[in-house]
Amino acid sequence: MASPLGDFLRARRDSTAPEAVGLPPTSRRRAPGLRRAELATRAGISVEYLTRIEQGRDRNPSVQVVNALADALALDVSESEHLRYLTKITGGACIGHRGEGHPTRSVRPPVLRTLNLLEPGVAMVTNRLGDVLAHTDAFARVMRPSGLLDEQEPNMTRHLFVDDRAKRFFLDRDEVADHQVFDLRLGPSESASAWFVADLTERAGDDFAARLSRHLPPPDVPWRLAHPSAGTLTFERETLHLPSTDAQEIVVLLPADAATERGMAILLDGALPRPLRVG
Image (cartoon, rainbow, N blue to C red; front, side, top):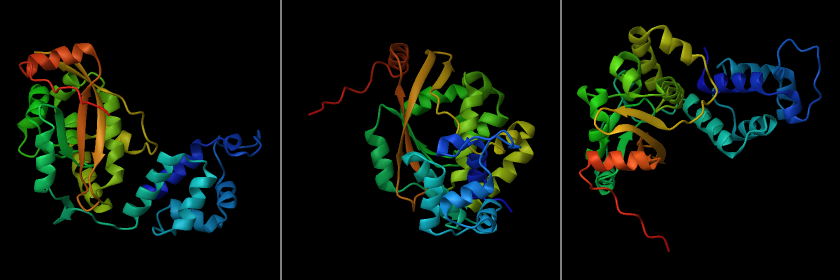
């Protein structure tokens, strides 16, 4: 049975050119990436052990092995942190779930107070499944035409695949969907992700299933939204990770251009955040 850690390692090995890690290229390769034996040798582990990790049969490699694999693949700092996170959730850390894999939708009061301080900014509390757990009023004004908030328990990932309004509202819907599907591999736990994936696969079909087979991080693109009242709005996203016991994060949408700032002034009746004073 595959695992998030194994999927990532296999995909990254397949996409890493030998010369990128100091190995000589050869024309006799059947695939362009690293051979399993080459990665195992560079990491100082056996091929049999690497095979077990990639196939999900060993889900608890040591910190030393994970660091060795990161070095062997020449991962940068953020990629190495991503590898360690996958190791954590693959090893069975079930954070923030209830019942049959359902993640909790409760948000701690201090987090809600923090969200309130972000008004009139555009922000939400979410998790890696895409649940919208709490949001600012400005977020509602921006997102309401998409239909996202019509659901009793809004979920961004599900919305992108099952609501035709999302395909019109998100101008780069495919790229945003890629990002949301990739995040499913990151928790809040492997069991929660498995439950959600099984549920959405039945409803979303091939479009969703095809994206599940892509194991490398997609590019992080701005959100370009076709708002019926404010025109095209473009937002950069800043993610504030909460403690791991919450398995939640605050996502803040920041206007990326002057047109978006003007559009937000229309939506918020001029109540835009004042610039912060630095120093």
